[in-house]
Length: 600
Image (cartoon, rainbow, N blue to C red):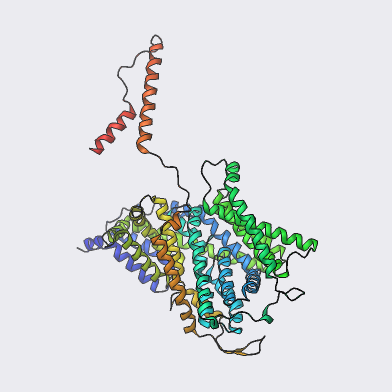
């Protein structure tokens, strides 16, 4: 009786055991492994599993350690830490703030743009939120920004690290979904940039209808001025126009250049064309600024030069990393290695690379890589027992019987991930929840949109999950980004060192209120991706489609030609070779007969 009950309810009991272990505060990696091993041994004792259940486990663990795709995680982490610790965030926020500062809402727009750039370089939410909280928040409070808007812009832009390539989240999701990291990057590029655009549009709307909430920087706060007192924005605009013309010129000839270089037979994808055009335009801007600095021609203003020297190097590094991946010249792992080397070169060129910085970067990279691998090993042990108990079939039946079909599946999964994201880290969600949901998604989602392949459906699903995880970082009361900002926001009233005025402290309730508007924007983006899958799949390369019937017919024809040739050879060689006692069975015809029998 007890064995029957255990057999019928093994999977729910296993989930409950894992939940209890996680609630005790036991480390997630060891909780997963303990749950998998413990319930595996219970199942073997109860006669549910064979004694050889875990014999292949060592091979699976070695397979994880040999997975080249996961090498991209330490490479991109190292790149981000080097860039962040070398003062890139401070330089970017100061420079971009000066560009947009003269307009209402300009500092908030600068925070969002820098947040997107930090997301693409560091890929770590905590680093982005803390950096901008320390640098931008005092400036925004000093010049009268609404605390709700200021804190919301900082926390929301910091979470862009979840969805903008090259994101660590996208690497892990691609690995767990069994899909290409390059395709995941290509699918997430347009939605990520659209989300940045939504944030900026929100700030613009606030600046138009509630200008007092987002005032412009006063003239005395603008530090880059020409000798004649002008701001230098005209020169910057001229440089932008030149780079735009160069970028469009490259885009018009990109396909011809890449076709000749790579011997392609298909047109270049749109995302690849955009990235390469931006790369060429950025290189031209940097070259013009260097020539202007060396020759002293004075064609560019101080502001234009500062923007170019601060903004272009990290942008070029990101574009080169993504461009080589999209072109197929480098794998994501090789692209990450190139990015890490580029970050070291940038730090050396700024004379900010020392032994202390190198030790911090290597230590943090080793910690994060070990953290990811231990969780992955633990989840592998858990999945051994889970799959042996037919847990994937149990989950599949659970969702197949759900009203709403594929749309109902997406809604429930997004709600589940949204709630889990408030309590546990995205790595844990990716290694625990995604492997359970992936087989169901692969079976249900391709039929939702006509013409969508299984690969495209899984990339679409992965981008939806990444966007959802980003939303969960902002959700009160447990959103991680909110706590990161709370840790660096002023807890007490203080006297501003520039204006000398008394600045009230930032309340936790103000941080929570600031996140609400941006949560709504993120949910709008998640809904847009679900309703318009082409936002993700439009940039994906379509694989070569094979007509199975035509291929089978060709195989039969080839077999017939070979048979006729063999007969002719047999006639010609009749005196030299004895005839066979019995005709051999044609394997192609046997296969055809078996397929016809199966159809009947």
